[in-house]
Amino acid sequence: MEPNRLTATEAARAIAAGRLSPADLMEACLARAASREPAVNAFVHLDPAQARRGAAKARPGPLHGIPFGVKDVLDTADMPTGYGSPIWAGWRPRGDSAAVAAARAAGAVIMGKTVTTEFATRHPGATANPHNLAHTPGGSSSGSAAAVADFMLPLAFGTQTAGSIVRPAAYCGVVGYKPTYGALHRAGMKVMSESLDTIGVMARSVADCALAMAAMTGRTLGDPEAKPGRAPRLGLTLGQEPGKAAPETVALLRRVADQARKAGAEVVDFTLPPELLKAAETHPALMNMETAQSLAWELNEARAQLSPVLLDRMDWARSQPMAAFREARLAQSAAKLCFARATEGLDALLTPSAPGEAPEGLGWTGDATFNLLWTTLWGPNVTVPAGTGPKGLPLGVQLVGRIGEDAAVLGWARWLQAAMG
Image (cartoon, rainbow, N blue to C red; front, side, top):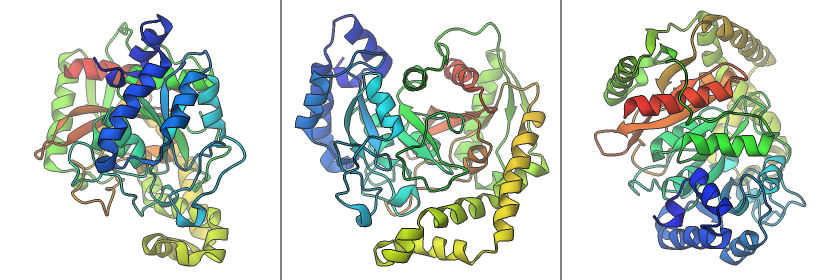
């Protein structure tokens, strides 16, 4: 197998055993990027010479020599950080973000900066879906999802405010892991929504996500490949807007639920309590009003360089009464408490990762309906590939867990993959 097609876990084992060098792994990844990047456009900054130097001096650690992509809303001291906006083009931070520093300390090699939508919001970059270049890879972690899916690198950072890790991972057919809120420190990130933004990872296996997060945080996330002593009890839901699920998504969820039952799981219908519906309803106000606070300088001093779609949302947010903001924050707090009670006795919720396949065209990155509520609740969300849709593009399903139960949710995600065959 070509080294760039190894998962991070496989590559780490090969490097530790002396069967593979960080230099050879990086060369394979760079060769893949050279052949595919002109079409996919996953990177906003990729300097092969710099990547080679990084591989040559990679630190020892659990991620020793593993190429890592960095979404361009996270600061890097040795690479430009533009936040997906012309306002910040060419900006070179003095230091790394906390997440990037943690990855380097664990031995990872930062290969390059991946494309993000404008400030990780709506206006898309140039990245295409590697499975079909006429379709979006999703957003806002567009480049990270595409680069991992297209075997340019095994690991990449994403960030999520509504659905920016889970949805593009599902659209591109990889694993996306949004951990419990705050698992990775956001210092050095261009934070948009103080109450929602969460840093996570994308990879080609659940084990890779656990490896990366454990290496960067020092937390024990277990071994998702270990067979659990029992089958899970899962709650089944189409979320707060079931009508937005495409027919293939409804059929997919039913099929996966049946496969889980055949493997021994108990799968029960889960009805969203009013508190969760309220949190989903007020998510746009919370997200956009906090984003308008974050972008105060850009809105006041560089308005002409913001996209029309972002300006529309920011002007709307600034026109809202502060009572709407307080209501959204209270709804979030109430929903987090409610979710813990409502899911007692369940190991996780099983729900779609996206409405359907990746939409055609690069002008829209898709609908976050099936993600925004779970992001609001602060617990872990994991999407795993679960088949293809009518156009042959990937579909995913996600597991949603309670705050702090990351190890369990990762383990059940891997169990579910095995159940799906």
